[in-house]
Length: 355
Image 1 (cartoon, helix red, strand yellow):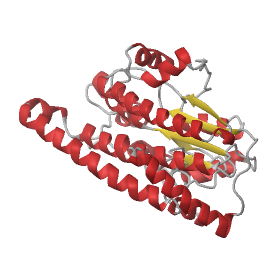
Image 2 (cartoon, one colour):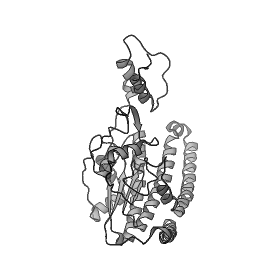
Image 3 (cartoon, one colour):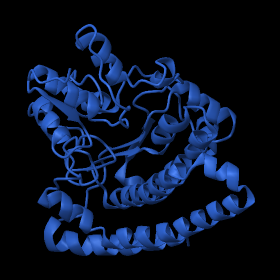
Image 4 (cartoon, one colour):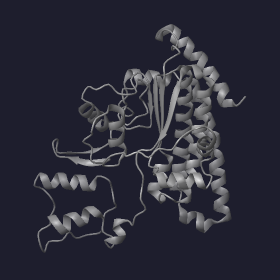
């Protein structure tokens, strides 16, 4: 028996004890349940490439033999994660122009990973509607969708609720196993990185260590946590589950949508989907309908600084459009940061923009 299954068995025993003490009866069979697996940022073109190259063997096999079908889906405009998930979870036409934007009504910028921003947008735009995840679980999403187990969402992570924190901590055995297993995998990845550095010091140093931090953080710790947490929820019979795997999106933003590192991350996500599918088959009485989807795609482009001769986008905007003719900012270019454009717009609106 795989160690993951043993740990999940122990967790199921603990869950039964908790349910008898506090949560009531076990989930009833006979009703359909919803399970959504989102591969963030994966376009249909890259998906077909990954299937052709054998980078997602499980999805390819179930489409060829298991009766799964591939359907195109229009994700709306703008094609960004917050807008898509708001529409999918609440059935509304969202007013969310991007992942980071300036909100004119409140005269402030909205950046979804910032504490409070996602929760405020969800309250305003859901408008009291019932979310599709009511009573269920949400992992790696921007919004909760009404989920009870919602600690690992942008809307709750930095300002957790009591019920969300309790639901997450009740999975104590899964959390402990994820920490132990991920520590071992991290040690292996660091050893491999050191061996590559010894074999090719110049090339490995040029490639940098950022990709290793991304791989360890997202493709080991976060993916393992989400996969085992979802497996635990399936065994418990949660009415609805939505998990968003971020590996490919982050790596494709960093290196390009068809870069080798981004495509390799799809194999790890494919393995996670396979593990979730196997758990679903072990509890057929729970009747899960499994959907694998993506919220948007990505296109390879030329960085703006390369087109503009090294100048950042915000500096071009303020120097070429907002600065009086003949006046130019002097001094060295400051390091790029996500708050520079928003703070510049705010300063301009308040009448204290630098000349």
